[in-house]
Length: 370
Figure 1 (cartoon, rainbow, N blue to C red):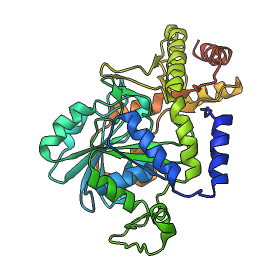
Figure 2 (figure 1 turned 90 degrees about the vertical axis):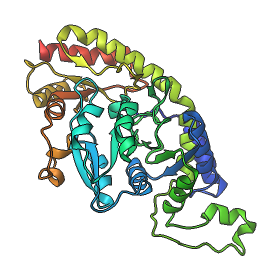
Figure 3 (figure 1 turned 60 degrees about the vertical axis):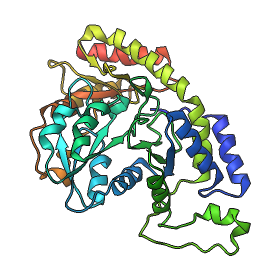
């Protein structure tokens, strides 16, 4: 992945620096408004990362010690970690092979009296069928949080991913389409929840530093701290970059989908299965992963030989339950998760990838896979 950053982002960051206000301030507020408008949601709260966004989403949903949260193991470890941060227990569910996402069918057997939330991930930008999972969880009083870390630019039934979620979390890490370097966003439908999340991201402060400054330079405005909060703020420098990136998002998605379709056409004869759109939506191809054929060489060998040919590919999406912190966690069998994480790899895909570079990738794979 190579972020699509240029002179416009550099100028926006420089203007923020020259303004003298580089911490959370007016540009963060503008980015929040623009992101909420793009999604069609009433509230967006900018934070320091998607991990902190997930942590705040869980706190906002009332999740705490002793609660269970159903999550996919087939996800970056931050999804499970956020559950652990609030003292709850991540319960790993399997995913479907076609999308790498949770389904109502994989979640249902794991719901108990202790289940307080489900975190449904749009893995690699493939939209999860949130509607089906919410239909299962809602009547039980279980909150569904959408981990849309990879999802900006993807669509679920024609609407931006996350727009229909009660709470959703986004990442702006450089591996995502829309990047601010580091950073994230929480979106929600409830105004009181949004106000609380704004306080929590800034140490529980009743009046933000920007708002205090706006009120006569802060004179006579005394903030209070009514609950323990966190330092999860985004800077105005990051937000300035984010505003530019948001305007480029449609072009990024269109280009990535074009390149993904070209990969599909070129790789199909080799018997490899490239991730594809589900029936309920369209993805942004944040991660263009493919499942190696059963008769393919070991994936490590494939990656090593690709590197020798000048191609930087990566192992497939990780499985959290195979990592040390969660290897002893109680769980049901996860056959699809283990197959996908063991036999998939991620191909180079970014806005400025050329067809010649793509041909190099495909040519190397043809040699390796015969």
